[in-house]
Length: 165
Image 1 (cartoon, rainbow, N blue to C red):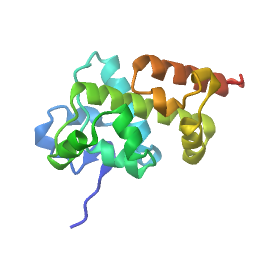
Image 2 (cartoon, one colour):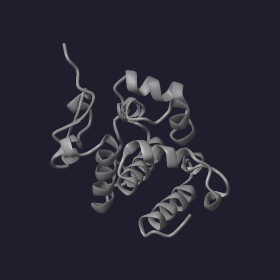
Image 3 (cartoon, rainbow, N blue to C red):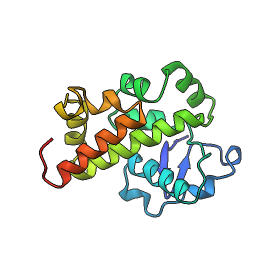
Image 4 (cartoon, one colour):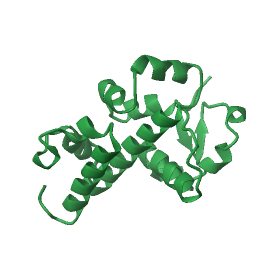
């Protein structure tokens, strides 16, 4: 049997629909044009704009993040302990609220970097390089905190406007 992992036509596949009452809210339009990072970022922004701050992402985003280029140690640093995440993935559970916030933060920053640099590969190179503006740390090193994510987003916006960072 073939299994699809990720968003397909706005629906998260390989995740039991009955265990999450808000799955219909995950519709985002033409998912074929979006990366998993764009999809998760879009979902989080839609949820926030409707005041639904208590939503949870399916844990299946974790292997999809890895398949799209985020290293396991980066996920562990940013989102949480790998063993807990893998248990949630294997049990087809949702991420807890803190993990959801951190996964959405990671998705937002990677999505933004992909748009600014034009290619996923270039985005990941920048996200892994130490940066003077970020205290000689890489963007991935500081994404575990909201304040770090704001600094990374500001640096990305500066780049998008042609201001050196």
